[in-house]
Each structure stands twice: as C-alpha cells, then as structure tokens.
Image (tube, rainbow, N blue to C red):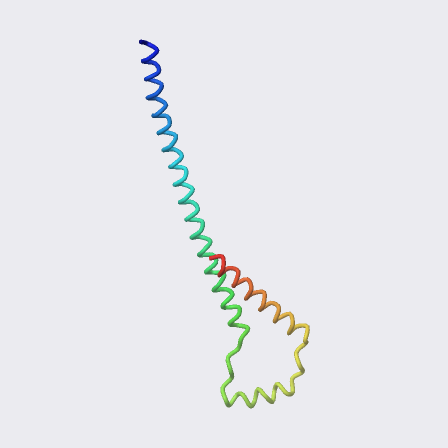
Length: 110
C-alpha cells in the first residue's frame, strides 16, 4: 500500500518536473527568438547607414553635367590641363567597383 502511494507520488512529481522543464525550455527559446530578432533589426539599421554612406560617396564621385555656357570654358581648360595619371584613374575605378560590390553583398544578405 505504501509503495503504491510512493509510486503515485513520484509519477505526479515527474509530470510536474517535466512541465517545469518544458516551461523553462520554452522560455529560453523565446528569449533566444527575441534576442535574434533584436540583433537582426540592429544589423539591418547599420546596413541602411552603410548604404547611405556609400550612396553619398558614389554621388560625390559622379559629377553633374555642366551648364552650356560653362561647357565651352571647361573644354578649353581640359585641353590645357594635362591628362590624369592612369594609375590614379585605375585606382579610382577599382575603389568604385569595390564599393558597388560591397553594396550588392549587403543587399543580398538583407
């Protein structure tokens, strides 16, 4: 009789322990979910800032077309000015290509 009561008591406690363990595991999973969501949101905001930065950098590199009056004066100045260094030009193009590639990678990831 006593053994039956002990076994019944243990069975009830095992269910309670299992329920507590399940609750704790569920709580931990929810904490992980919230943390991952928050981290992803922060990374997304950082990537937006990086995109804006690259847009500004690339916009500074490209110049708008000069007005018609200034076009003739600039052409004369360009004829007088020596040609830019090919190595510098190549480095500038490489930097632009790297920036565009980085923007593409960021866009693909998020």
